[in-house]
Length: 425
View 1 (cartoon, rainbow, N blue to C red):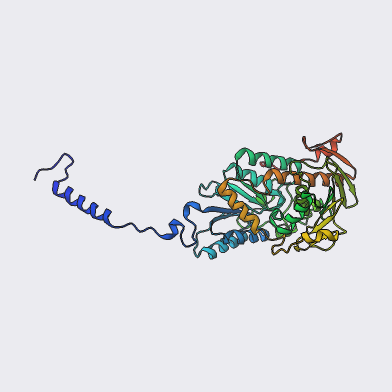
View 2 (view 1 turned 45 degrees about the vertical axis):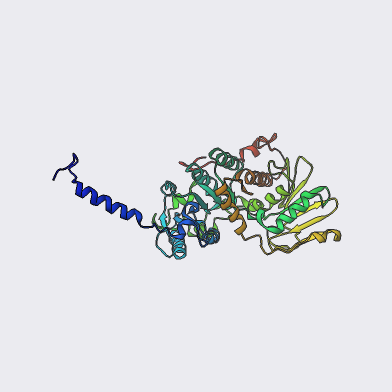
C-alpha cells in the first residue's frame, strides 16, 4: 500500500478523520457554574483574594468577604502559626476543601499572580508598609485602620496608591453606614444652617515608652518575632504583645486620638467637605484638642461629654441646628423642627458589610472607594497633627499643602519615625 511522505497510510488518515468528525459532532456540555448561572459567579468575574496578618478584627472582615459570591479566598500570610492555621481552617470550611495555602513570608505570598486583592489586618505598625508593598505587587487593598502611624506615612501611602493605580479601601466603614451618612447629609445640605463646629469622639491620647519584661522567644515558625516587629525599634519578646497588648505602646500605636479619630475625624472632615485638606490650627486642652479649618469651622476632638449614642460618636453643629450619632445607630437632632429628618437604621457602625461590598464593586469597575487612600490620608494627618500638639502641650499652626508645622522645628521632626533596617518607605 502506498504511503505519503509523512508515512501515514490513506486508510489510517481516513480512519482518523472519521473519528475526529464524530468527536466534533458530540455536543459540548458547559456547566452552568462556568457561565455564572443559578447565582454562581463565573470564574472570569471572581475576585481572588489573600489575607495578610488576620487576627480578631481581620477575622470578622474575612467572614464577610467569604460570604460574598464573587470572592475566592486562596491564601493567608501571617508571622504567627496559630493564626495561619485558624484562617486556613475558616477558608477550607467555607469551601469544603483543603486548598487555602499558608505563608509566613509576604514576598512569597505577594508573588502569586492569581491574587487580585489582599485584606490587610496586621497591627498598626505594619499597615502603611504592607499596603505599599502590596500595591507595588499589583494587588488591590482593603486595609484595617489606622492606615498610618505618622504624617509622612500617610503621604507615602496616598502617593503610592495613586502611582500604581490600585483600588484601596481603609477600614473606616462608617462612610458606608446609614446614620453617619444622614448626619453628614444634614451638615452638608444646610439644614443645620451654616456649619460651625464638628466634634470627633476620641480616646485619651497617652501612650507609654516602657517595655514589657523579656520572655523566651518562640521558634521562628511559631512566631517570627523579628518580622512581627517589622519597621519598629527592636525590643525583647513578650507574649502579651502578640495577644494585643501592643496597644498603648508608642512604638506600635498612635495613641487614643488616632485610635478612634481615624474613624470620627474622618466623618467630621467629610461633613465639612474637607476631604482634600486638614485643619490649620491645633490647640491641646487637657486630653482634648481643639482645631480650626481655614474656612472657620472648628474641630473638637474629645473623649467626654457625649450623649450616649455609642462608640465613635460625632456631632455637627450649625447656627440653626445640630445632630449627634454614633455606633448604636441612634441619632439625636435639634431643634424639634429638624426631627422629621430622622430615619431608622438597621446597620451599625461596627458592621463593614456595605464597605466591603463597595470595595469589591470598585475592584471590578476600577472606581474610587469612599475611604480611598487620598481621603484616609487627610483625616490621619489631622489626627497625627493633633497628637503632636498634645505631646508638645502647645498650640501649633499647620500648613495643609506642605503638610508641615509653621515655625516649629521640633513639631516638624515628629512628622515621621525612623524605620528599623531593612524596612523603608
